[in-house]
Image (tube, rainbow, N blue to C red; front, side):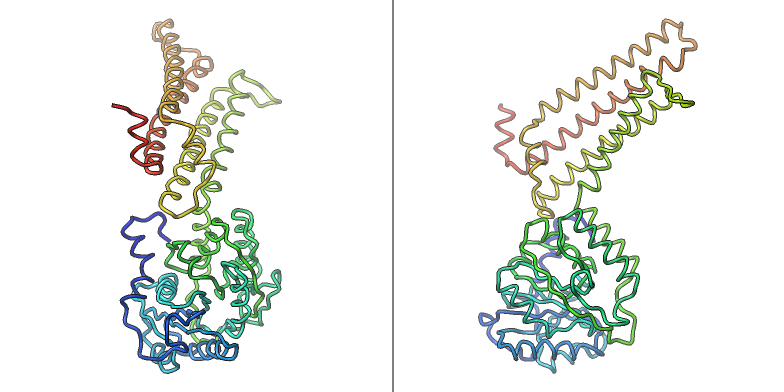
Length: 431
């Protein structure tokens, strides 16, 4: 995942589907429904060398559509297969869309963008998902749910056939990331990695997804939760992979990329919480070291002050980074706008930030001058280390905090300028 990326790259990634829908050449195979306006459901299957199992997946999807009287189509998003996958899909009457940019997410964005249906159901082509469950997903979508997620795990009522999922994924990886999603994003989903899911195309377009790899699926869940989507979960049965080759999934690489996505999408957990903890520890160190307290055999002195200052400086910077990240992510459409950050930007002006920063800066410089005066009174000789450091360390800390606040206040004003528009600058700085 590349978050944030430059505007040109994001436009290219999010526009893959739209470009394919309007410009890409499609196969000559006929779809179940021939007229775009008649399509209610598009089943999108990403494909990369799936000749062994693709036919069975397409056939199940087509049968579910046909037997349940659904106005639907099957779209195979071919991601550069070198085997007979494309020919198989065309021969079975699926609509094939070629997606040149490699990656699971790219393939799905291309297929979804080219789909004609109001609703989308996506599922892998490895034979592990039962596309005959399509009517259940569609029923939930018709009820008004924005996202309908399949669940393979027992905790959500699902079933995993023997050999269908590695124990590491089943017992640890999937439950762990599902729990993180619940704690950080208020998700009620038990199986965040399940690739069989349905959603409205309008909802997908609102999400403006950016991930091009395997984390595309978890990005959809995270953003759906953050944007307040209506989400339902449907228990499904996971069958063993029908292919003889190894799957595209890489356990630790994709696990790390999922964790990275969660962190990037949660500035509070990545920046704000660690920042508050560090500042609290730093203030505790000051509380113990400034009066030189002794607890048992432990004597808190100047070195404790140094550690406390380090914690305060790092924590202070982390908090501002969290505010910057939230403001920038909302501005770029990556995350929804945070009401707390909006309140900060609305209530704290550049001038107020500069006043507070200048006060901290002056106080810090005053303490440093007092320390210098002590050195002068000692005729620039040796000083009482423990006493002098109680002026030098807080002085350096306040000076650094004041300087950081000045820079941060200007950066926040730039971000706020982009949110409010050019008229804000003319009101705040009249000529």
